[in-house]
Length: 82
Image (cartoon, rainbow, N blue to C red; front, side, top):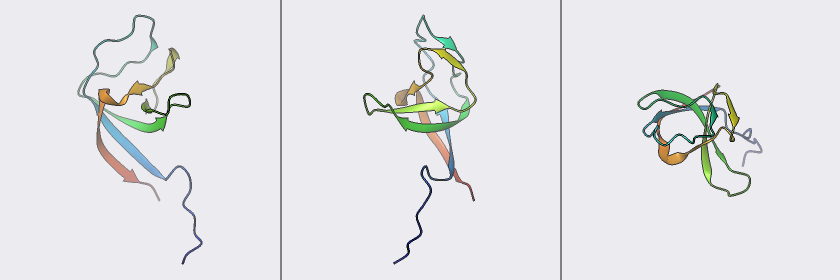
């Protein structure tokens, strides 16, 4: 049995395509995804609700918190970094 432990989070880059860019909140300040575009993302759990959310890497969001619901994106690829 190996005592090697994997780093947390795992060394991979995820990509997802935006499938739903509608219903942008009126008070949203920041970058908003475009339908059909592929973005580098991270999937993280919300600290309060525990629901998975999509964080688009490189996006700026001032308000509200810059995370998107999972139903707005579909996974495209995962690339393992080494």
